[in-house]
Length: 332
Image (cartoon, rainbow, N blue to C red; front, side):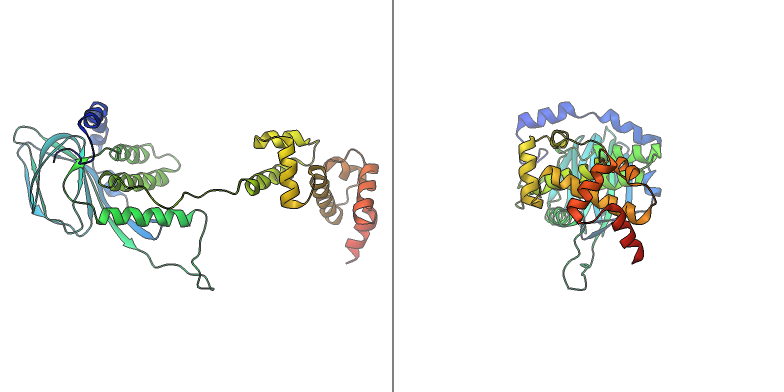
């Protein structure tokens, strides 16, 4: 049982070839650095608290007597070998393997009689959070939360049903210990977010090691026409104040001009030139109300070729001149 049940010998040999225990020596500079951080965060509907996250070394022949923890305890072996003793038997462990003991799994750890064993340890509490509801008794769903909740719930389910015997770290969860350590060491902006993501990746990759099933829920997909419409109109709004041809906006979306015209017709019942002109006029109306710029100045600032052309379009679209609109708005 020293090999993962779902790996053949060729996969195992490839994994061992790519395994590089020396890279984890970096953590020996301060093995308990992450233990000193109070790491708590939400993931989906769960509260995650990191209790311990460190590199430990068991000298040759050392035995840690049978014990258990109330939290989840992940054990990753970057170097050395030894034995894991569970209630149902003894299991050899060596570099490149991992096992999960917890919550409440009785286990004993033994280093090899002639070789020390390094162990990356992650102890975490996972607490189910109450579902947040809006006033209408519907779940509050923010950016991406629905999918994150589903992934977090499936990961915890797999961890809760995971057997305790060791298997290969075939999805390379161990490398994320290095990612977390480097984030702490470098102290750069985003360190907490990086460490948070590293912990989540350890959980996800560990959960997959004993479960080969794929998620059944489809990944979130966009309505591409609606998506392109939003991108196109945002680009128009960002660049409306200068000459803006249809082809430029279409190129920005990596589609042809005809396709962009069709999208605008379906989503806004407008042509490209009609949408652009309408938006320019809306900005002119705001400026007429809140500024004292001349019509010529407004034309230049909002993408019209001249004050006289702005006067013409404004009168045609709104039924009154820009000056009449300004006077009307300031009287209200």
